[in-house]
Image 1 (spheres, helix red, strand yellow):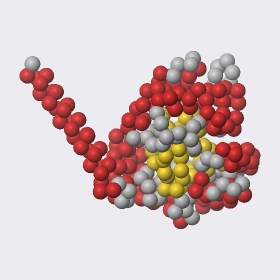
Image 2 (tube, rainbow, N blue to C red):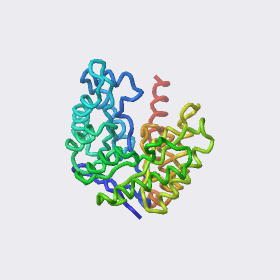
Image 3 (tube, rainbow, N blue to C red):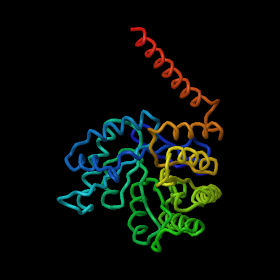
Image 4 (cartoon, rainbow, N blue to C red):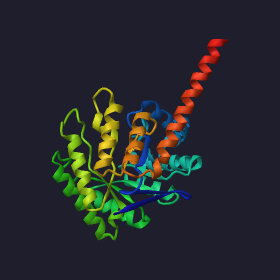
Length: 304
């Protein structure tokens, strides 16, 4: 089975079918976060600093870094994203030794991120579109890094999971033409919202099973599954457990939600990826001790 290696200057993360599930923290991303976008336009990185530390504290193994800010005075991302993503990566690396996932649709920003990143970051992403394949795969080869392969092509995103699987295979084959091994490909099979497509969950479970059969790791934007529905974290937690059982090996997600993190820890335990249950026991012991401490503080306040 393939093991994808992602590294900082001092830390190695292994993504694989016999490894603990890999959590890629999604919070360093201004998309849909108006306040963060405005802060970044003004060179204010205080929220980013908090997001870095909080995500690592909550269990993120890798941090996704996205600089997709739409600048009011210069809306061209080819000019704005490369310098900003360098600043963000340098900041993240000054705060933690957790490896980085460089996230951009702008090739120049991806290369700027590769120049700034220490170790062996994960590149996010390449698609099955011809122009994207011809632009991104040479970068992957040049810098010897793993890459997220998103299962859409020049025809768009198919609702047919078999078509998306064939697109993934096409990307893997084209990568091989550049001498890029399949262990360095992490496929995103594209998660549809369950509220819009009732078979969305079943599709992903089937796709990651097929990817496992050909020895290719996978990832996804975990919260996409619950878009537009109430109690999203409840859906996300159940989805992650079931997807892990089917063969999903990583996810780009919010690691600060306790329900989702507990679901992943339980799945690791049940999949025999937590030796002797050590991580499960430790995390719950810490939670119980915190609960006891809180109750004790309340009793002391009541007495006074």
